[in-house]
Image (cartoon, rainbow, N blue to C red; front, side, top):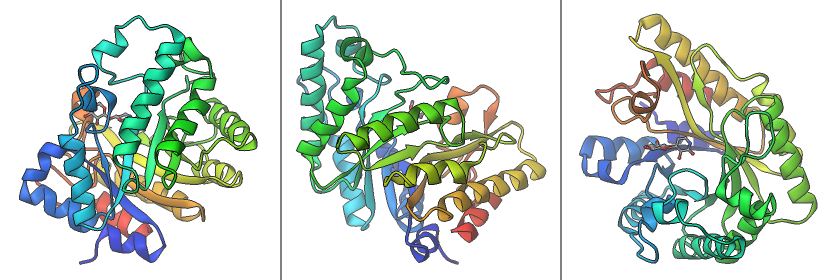
Length: 313
Ligand code: XIL
């Protein structure tokens, strides 16, 4: 049969998946990642705690491995993530840094990480999860020390480090119209008006079965109308376990709806799933009693969601 990558390419888009470096040793995993998908995002390997667990001691092995995998398979590489309040190394999170020092740590981290993969990363999540649910800025070590300016600073540093990469801001619960996506909209409108090098907005789309975002297509379109690209960056649709046939069909319809929202917007560049198989998904570890969120089941067999997504591209 066909592939997600092929179907997406026919509409000028990419189909991506998050990958875990240590899973690439499994031939079944690697084969699906390499053949079904035209883009990969490191699920954890490029996060700050992964690349600099101790101050000034860098560990690039897993990130390099995924970058090499993308190169070997001719795939887009989506860098994730430069500035985020979560999965920071303890030395940074628990350190007591003056604002000027934190700014330097942030821009040095961006220079080191985006610099290392300069010319290889197609798109970077420069800033992740900057908002609270009401659309105001989240209280993070970066916002507390530097105010909202940390965001523009981060984009400028990323652009210096890799002038060819498309730079994104990414968040969850911003997929549909609502207060949180309004906050994102106000910010990116301001940043583009001021000439800050931001090129796109990522919509994580960690969704719950039966709770589809409000007017997703219209939401993506309003960002595109600002001259920004949009990407569905971390799609999964979780359900209360156990799995039933009925839930799987409902899930397929919702995967189709998300993919349709992307293909309806010219500037939507692609859809990335946050892991392709229920065997590897982060969901059961994070949401008690929930799972089965991916397009492949635990035995690496395509689910109805896989077929729905392929047909929708
Ligand atoms: C998740 C990973 O999938 C897990 O393996 C890890 O333990 C926690 O982070 N939003 C993001 C991703 O931007 O980086 C998160 O990934 C999921 C939520």
